[in-house]
Length: 389
Image (cartoon, rainbow, N blue to C red; front, side, top):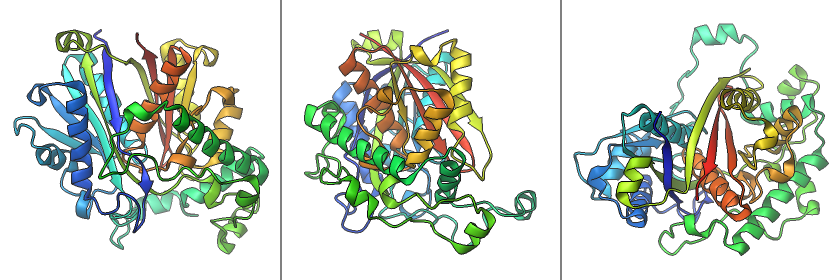
């Protein structure tokens, strides 16, 4: 089987996904186009040699409608002969774009492909694609007669099931900001970031946060009806121990080994194994546990063989429950911080996780990295990456 290699990965700074955020004046098509242009310039490829562009985007409505991957490719001025497709696997969209791209290379369908993602949550808010309509339908509502819940409630249910205290969640959130700030100071991820209109750093990292400031925040999802349905909930999830709503884009170039040699580019990593999994859509965010187990079984690896992990910090309980369930060493997890600090532009975050994973492997000299992402609806992706060079 052919090997799929990551030649390089780039992203924009991640900015606050609200009016006045550092990137909020940029159109989503332009932001992704800027990222694609940066990737092509960085790698020096002929854009006409790209077989396909696979883009992740969750809220495909308004300014992100009508196949934003194709719109951005053309907006970048690249050849019309290169096609593009836009996919939605919720928070895992960019990671799934990477996986599909790598699978295409391994199968011989592609030699050179771009996987990317974008989400401008300041301009296209979560839920705006529903337009006030019933997006579930009567059959699904009958199956889950008591009702599906908001992700924040799922995070509360996870905290209750694993016995995670407010102090533990806040301590983890503080660690995320501290690790992100330290990584930024060391320049670990600087090579991956493409400045946009003078914005060159992530806007969400809070260097001045503290245990006291986090403890002062009120629970974010308190609801009387939910409390009656789920009396076990302790109301420990706050804005401070949750991922930030953000704007951003990411892109990576994936090639066969032969194509990388022809391009005279030394790949940074290889994508070796994949897994996807479904889980209880009410608990929702625990799919990363079976997805990780499936990936390890498929690859023949043990958890102890993995040098670095990137586990998306949708909410602090998600990562802590994953680590406890699998017995993972948190010292090897999100060593440069996570979405609690950087933010989570949902269609693009998979690329940021990959960039951070490769960067942390390069910094530490580790070889194997595992990336996993929980997703709305009770799904998850997991991908195994091997550092090269």
